[in-house]
Image 1 (spheres, one colour):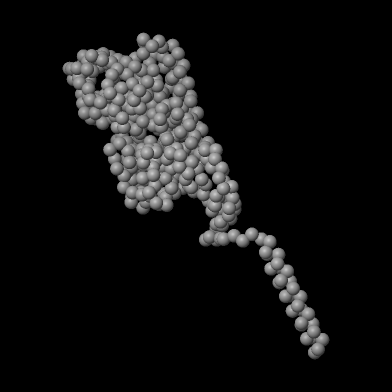
Image 2 (image 1 turned 90 degrees about the horizontal axis):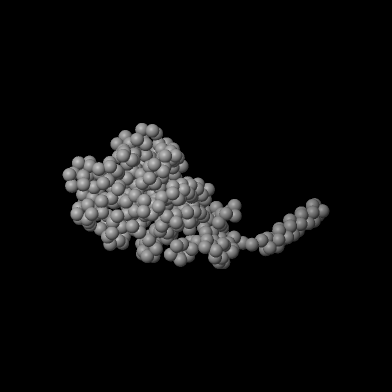
Length: 393
């Protein structure tokens, strides 16, 4: 019995010593705080987009992947955003359309209902059925509560001047200012920046490649056209086609970019654009081509072709009056943005059909719609899309 007691005491001492040794070893391990069993808080050096490096506290997943990252947006603001972005809402249509083009599965809602033609919506159902949330652009004022109720991971805003106002209203939802469109020359930079932000760099590069190919084609065509041989164009907007925008305006940049000569010598209205002009002035300009665009009545095409006053114009006499292709987004302004990239091919062929005899426009359009509008454009779809938009002279 005495031996058994001694053995029991020795056993207890051994176990206690083992426990003390284990606890002493634990003191060398860094303590972490685990949140919801999936995240931990650490202090680390994080690289910030825009070639800046800061030391910050980040939330890190158990796999070591940061749950957030810090960027510097186009308004110069330092913004902490989720590393993985699943849902995006946009304050304006330009950033909204580009988000759809690059990462449709991340778009949480449309700023406006995309255009459609009877029998063809140019959208798969999953995208056509996204909610319309509005936004802050042109004459539109969005609703903050609507945006917040959809619980986006990120909100994009192209207007740097109002981004702080948006952030104050959206609270903890990060708002990122991103300059999605200045001129055609800055398109690649904007596309690649958006691709990096949304984590779709490869697809963004594909869009830049398509754009670059289109630009190179325009350059090759224009190499043989003298300044004095440029086709003159009137962009007919608004009620009765009696509004327009001049050369140099963002609203008519596609004409300039593709080597057309915009006849409008008018004041460049900032923002929404559109300067009213008289019929007498249009007659004096006497353009080679008329393109019907923003806010024009749907019947204006037939009206121009049948009106005896418009009939005095060279463009009408030659049958060179065109509606801009407009589905699901305009190829020419309304809004001015990456949706105009496919319009580059259409515009150069419309201006200079003889010089573009080698261009297979249908193939280029179908390629663009498949890759960036995520829709298989059938021949019937193409015919409906291009009705009254291609050269009939």
